[in-house]
Image (cartoon, rainbow, N blue to C red; front, top):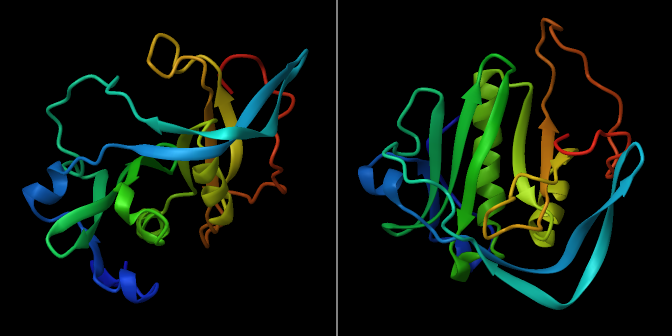
Amino acid sequence: MASTHSRSTRGAAAEAITYRAAESESDRSAVIKGEFTSDTVFEVVRSEYGFTLRSVPLDPPVHKVFPDDEPESDEVPGDSGDERRFVALDGDRVCGYVDTAYEPWNRRLTIVDIEVAGPYQGRGIGRTLMHHAVERARECGAGHVWLEVTNINGPAVRAYQRMGFGFCGLDTTLYSGTASEGETALYMSLLLDPPSDGSWAEPGPRTGSLTGLSPGAA
């Protein structure tokens, strides 16, 4: 990217927020408890030959705090050459971050995690962090950016769609045996400009539904 540091321009309240690649141990080790409130669930409708997604309003909305299901790891986000974290800072406080990992074999940049602290949500911080992640993807020569999101997180799905992401698959079993049992993992991707050497072709238009997919993981 052009610069490792940037300052938000989204209104006076966000002027103090700065962005950079994680530099210090405190940048890399910061943890924000994920949570959201959703008024929409993307319901998975099974058919004989696959699935269709249907947007269903939630009344009342649901509030979720992500459970601690993931196993402990000694690995620090952003430590390896193929991984990088970008942080949003309010002064010295990390108020948001995005963890990315690049996989050269299929030229995929994965959004491993993206979090914004509750009081800072709705201020464009997540979108700016994603912008830094996409810039990194282009620098790596990635063909696409890929992420996973639960089907009950309507606000996140809509935000990713506004950023240009589209549905590319789902898994009805990923959360089995966890505190998120019953939810479905939705996979979304953002196609980047093809390289100048034409080594990959731009696929046709994508739609917002998933049909013709085999049951289970897609």
